[in-house]
Length: 347
Image (cartoon, rainbow, N blue to C red; front, side, top):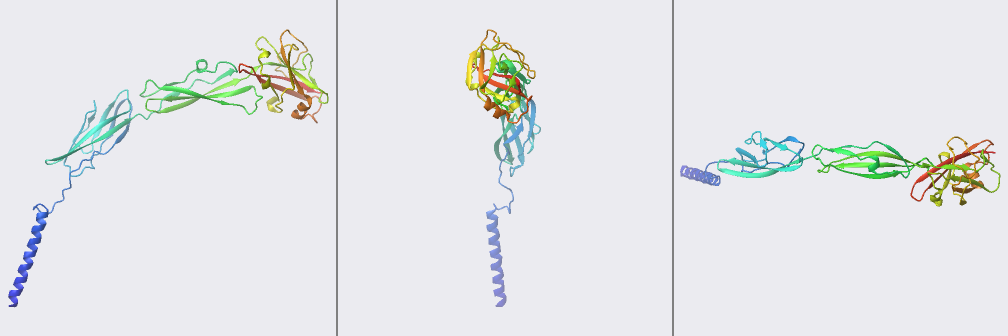
C-alpha cells in the first residue's frame, strides 16, 4: 500500500512539471526561450558640421538601432555620398558651394530578415567663420571738416562664403578731460561686418578732431602783455577777426577762459562786444604779442573779472615775472569749435 502511494505522488509531480513546461513553451511561441530584441531604427543626430567651400564630411551613427542585421543609408541631396552606405556608422561627404549653411536630410533603413524599419535625421551644415574686416587708417581733421566715411574712408570686408558682406558703422565721441585742450574730441568709429550667416567682425577707426586755431590778443594794442593782479576793473581780451575767421559767427554763450592744460578756469566773460581793436598775429610762441590796433575787420572783445582771474590762477602769492598762458575756447553757429591762446606776465 505504501509503495502504491509513493508511485501516485511521483506521477502527479511529473504531470505538474510537464504542464508547466508546456505553458512556458506556449508563452515563447513554442520554440523555447528567445532573446531577439524588437527591431528599432535610430539614425542619430541631428548632426552639426562647419561649412566651408569645397566638401565637408560627417560621421553618422546608426548604432542606436536595435535588432538590425542590415543597414541602408540614403540621401537625395545633390552630390552627397556615403563612403559605405551599408555600414551602421558611415561617413557622409557633402559638397559645399557658395552657400555654406543648409540642411541635408538623411534616411536610414534597418532590416532583420523580412522585418524592416526606416527613420530620418538631419545634418546641419553651418558657416561659423567670421568675415575678415579691415578699417581705414586713423585720421586727424579740424573741427568743421567733413567727418563722414565718404571723406575719411570706408571699411572693407571679405568672407569665405558670402560675397556681399554687410558693412555698417557707429560713432562714439570721446571728449578730453580738459575742455580747454586743442583736441575737441576723438571719434571712435566702430565698423561692423556681418555675413549672411550672422557671423560678425568689428574694427575701430580713430579720428582726432582738433579745434580751429583762432587768434587771441590780451590787452589789444599793448605789447608786451603785463598783468597787474591788484588793478581795478576788468581784463580786455580780443578774439581777432581774420579772412578765414568771422567773429560775428561766434556763439557768445560758448566762450570760456582756461589756463594752459586746464590749470585754471573755466571763466565766462562779464562783457562781450564787437569792435575793431586788434590785428591777427601768430601767437603760438610764448608771450608773442603785437601793439597793432584795428585792421578793418571786426574783433570780438571780451572783458574778464580780474578778481576771478586772480582766484582761478592762484595769484595771491605769485611772484612778479610769472608767465600766465590763457586759453579761450568757443563755438561758431555752424558748430565749428575753435581755440585761441595768448600769454601775459605778472607785474
